[in-house]
Image (cartoon, rainbow over all chains, first blue to last red; front, side, top):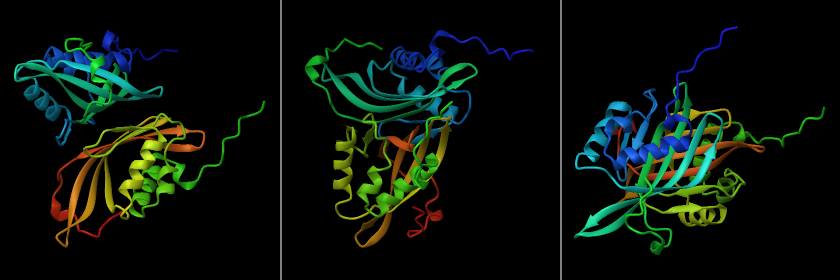
Length: 150
Length: 150
């Protein structure tokens, strides 16, 4: 009996956490190709940036990230605060802390994100990134600018 | 061999769509008890209202909806635009159209929501409602005030 051979999985497709880490790394290094490779190849994907409208499909999402990364990477410390995992899908509720320069001083912006991943033949992939403006919910003195994991 | 007997499921727990329809019905009728019964009994649940912070756990979510519904129900026409379903979890990307009165005229407000459901022993339940302000993405002349499904 023959078995369908699955394509080899790259390291970042082994788990939802791997894909998520690679997502924030790609944002940090402004690597648009690496970023877009993390999304499902199915066109049923969507993305909502903070304060923005829903972007449907690969082309619209790629355009938005190209604009977002035009001036360099986004240094984000992403902390997963809730995980709902099933065998073939995963949802993370994340607090993103963005390092930004305001009047020459390093400050933090806060974003609340929901990241959704599905298991595909090529490994775990992102299908939804829903982000909205947040505010600090944890003690700020525990955060040191420069202490960015991703 | 004995089988574990699952508790009986009420009509609104048969599918993610049932729970979602019941969620918007409960908002429309300002029925806080019905609304809260749709959430997972596990305390690992969270809710982000448009422009708001993340609320974790049953008590914080209940308080927020009690405030939201203090002046009556919210008439919402909810349209699911993306569905990612697995055997035990489901994610919906939804456009919510809220009927509001501005200067005596009926107008529509738009909200983008991500609703996440999990299959529990008691049936499908809500574990995450992430909502953020939106804007019209479909032709407004196709929407007639009063034509509210939920």
